Image 1: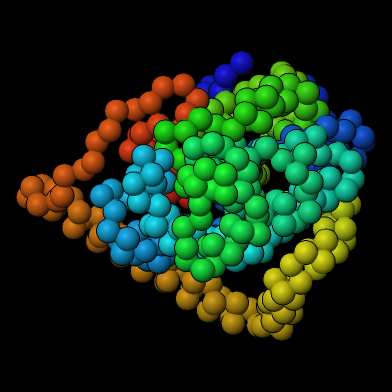
Image 2: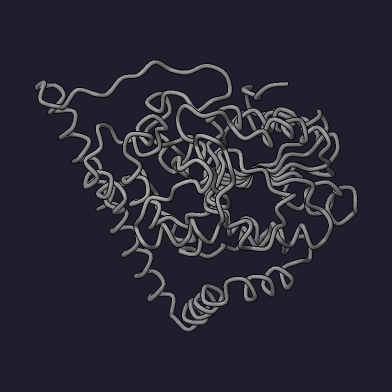
Length: 379
């Protein structure tokens, strides 16, 4: 079974498994006990509220870092051949992205809640930030399709490298070496030119066992991850919580689309299931600072008049328009430079085959490692 790419379902067609093709229909299905094996498929959109940078924006700071590193091409920082020649740029960037810098979001806490309630069969993630683990989801429940910072190994003899030693090397800005063969060591992140983890291939058909699939914060365009929802059996409900419809979801009778922010979406689902208090308890336990800020914001919002809230919305909209115009101006300048023949030649490489991380230019810079960077991402 492959990725669905068909048109949205005719709204007049009734759901086959759910009582209704709505969020309440999904919640009723969960409350009834029929959704005992839930499979999660998550992308970069679940981590943006944690502060994990949106790499598509040239103003985030990480693009500036890449420029400072004097790379031959931007994606070289995650290219295994370049890493062998010069690992320092990667470790300069890794220091800013290493686990511990960011804290789990409400969405990550929802995953933990599913595990605590015995409903989580497997969590597939495209992210390398380890926030699922930080939220308390056990290792055996997580499939990190593109690897992660959780563990490290030698790129030559493949010997495991101690986590504490890796953390110390990253903090010190040094290049770690294998204790056995003195080869270069890196976190077990999938670089361009490397195969995907064996755990992904071993579990790729797990969605066939699901009673419910929940897809969150992903553009579903990076293969082979993008094929996962298609492995769900016909009649298995699939819930998409995302900024927009992706991957053919919405084409089956029991597909439900909840378009919008991931954290807001899981809160609505938890509330519909009667789990909102449990979710808030976990969030306060796992990320108390963020939970406290959210409570203060809600209290502040309640104290504001209607005119105050309207003024805030107008200010927010004005900032978004300014940001959009700035991006448009940068794009216009790039097009003009290309038309004038002044833009620098792009680095071209032949695309690889199979389930390896091949030419990033086809997907947009570092999209296979950081889906935030995907061109045209809906995240």
